Length: 268
Image (cartoon, rainbow, N blue to C red):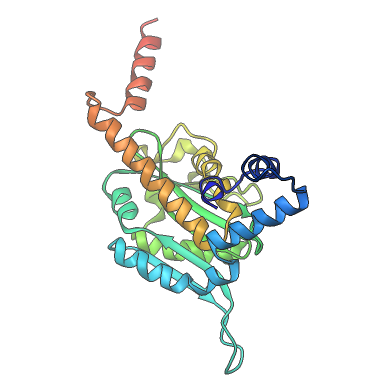
């Protein structure tokens, strides 16, 4: 059990090998696969059980991270003995929101990716650019599908959290090619943008990078997935903080590299 706990994606051939080495017996692929499913269910809890605990999970996060916003949308009760059906969850942790307001650039990437657990859905994410041109997570949401209704619900809470009163002060980046361009180029052409919202980024690499790092988490039940995302972000922020404490430059290393490259090109 402990070996599977430390490697939840252990292949069946490795399970069969472990059983053979420790117990001197052979098991089939089918037995190994079923044993793996049973062990994972014991470790993670059933998917249904995690949905029942989602309200408690949100309360704990709000207690742990001051200023966090956790919103759940569910269908009404179906009869006196019916249970509500989970539909959506919005998460914006207080420290992430505060750091965005304190120092991130007003450039925000929007993206969605598929969930691959038993109950499918979409994970919507909002990623900003930090002062070193890296990505900074702001908020994410689990929704039933990616459509205008779900994005409207998500962005409503986001605008409240970030206190966005004038959208012209921000640049939003998305790969939604089906969205029609606004009638005037000042809404979509960088030449018309004010200096503080301009960026060399012309694709949504911010969100794509984040989605790639949480790929394995998207296979898991909802609370397990959310915890893997939270733990990954905490670890990443702590490692970057430790690295920057040793850094001696007056600007971020990526920004400094850009400046040096352009100085070199200008002198040629």
